[in-house]
Length: 442
DNA sequence: TCTGGGGTCCTAGGACCC
DNA sequence: TCTGGGGTCCTAGGACCC
Image (cartoon, rainbow, N blue to C red; front, side, top):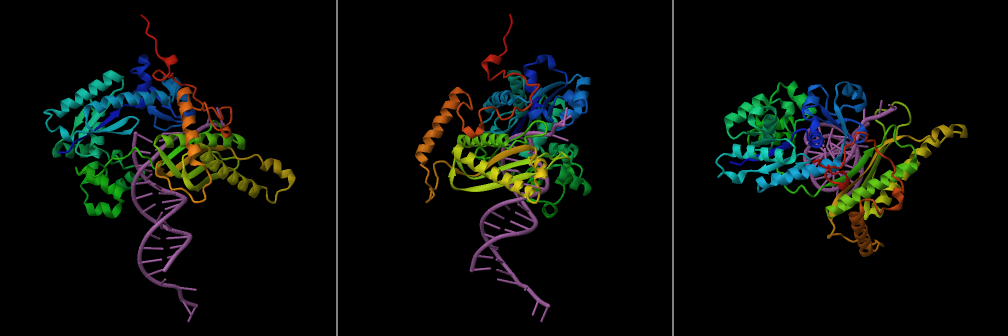
């Protein structure tokens, strides 16, 4: 029998913060998104207070304070490094580890038929990771990924499992399916679960009991796969994930957003530069560049402007300055079009008002259409000296690697930090900056 | 005043071709 | 008055995930 494990870190970001603040164990903790915008992680105690995932922080600030909830800005350097510790421990327990997200990984246990007690093996794994990293984890073991995800939720919910829930018989599977709400099934989101409840499907068991024909005719192939997985037939594969199909860097800007076009350009140049760097790390070149920028979805006053523009390059590239200039050209021309259309027919008196440009709340750059960097088709009309360019990029990456990122950058990114996201409640870089390492007092 | 960021996959429908 | 049929490719947008 094939068996897969899913290891899931409990309330990962909160647990990371707590590892370095043991005084907060047992107390409510939340972690905020960039700009301290939304609540994106909650400890069990915070969940018990009724705090929802994704709630805007400003709406909950007073409540959090009244209830003594510890609040943290997101600290991705810390979470990334803690994740790495957890994953390297998990890798010791399986021949095949698939890291699925910052706090989750699948483990292939198929080769472990000779292990007499896989449940006990799982419990050991959970105990070891929790003890060694300070991050509590839950492990589900089952014949398919979808069922393993489900098992891990049981492992988390019921203390009696000691962190590890094994679903290795049809009887256990049936029982679990009946207890599991359809909306919590992996791959069934809000939209689909609403449809299903409308059709009388309330639990995973209700759904699994439908005929294949019925599922095919009502939903897409993705949902059919989920149905098969619930019935114990593996059909989701995770292989070859490391090559991404698109790479995106985007940010929301603090408060009302950015009105100054120069500042917006600097931000976009910085996003382009970061995208290009991520892309070089996976040794690709991109064929397409998309830039986007838009005003707030929530603002009811002020001009609304949505920019989304894509350009195909004449030859794939991984050069920061080329990608950056393509993104900036698209951005500028879209803004020019907007301005011209809003200036047309206005007299001078109205212009001052019109020229108060829109406040762009969010912007980003997406690179896609990747080809491996060693397999580039030369463009017949390409006049750029590729070899020289490659040498320059390598040199810059190397300087930045040694001296801190952004030490060398292109001039369009500006000499100041273009915008400083709010992170009022940020913890320190306990694991990645020597100046922030905790000091033990004897 | 203040509402995250980064991905994947699928489908419908338009553009284009013969 | 009457305005084809079938195929491919691309893109935007929706749904999902963490």
